[in-house]
Image (tube, rainbow, N blue to C red; front, side):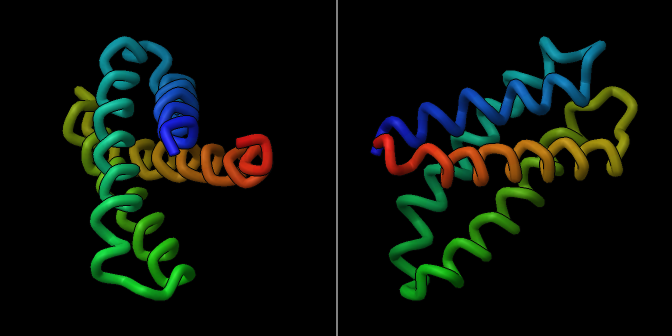
Length: 106
């Protein structure tokens, strides 16, 4: 479902940019790439290995949180792990909850 992918890679970089206001122009593209990779992993790779939907969502969301936070930490010139974790958690929470809200539209 390409609409869900497009929605996710639009929302998450915007949320991350709010956390990195002075370096949004660096962090938003990092968020775009990291989000694209984790989204594709969740929807194309994990289903081949995890049959239970709830387990797959849990593993995928936790994995996305950690992978994206690591990417933010690496590209943040000040290497602030707390900020990276908060930005990742907020971005993933926003896209997950907004996705649930608009899923019936697609």
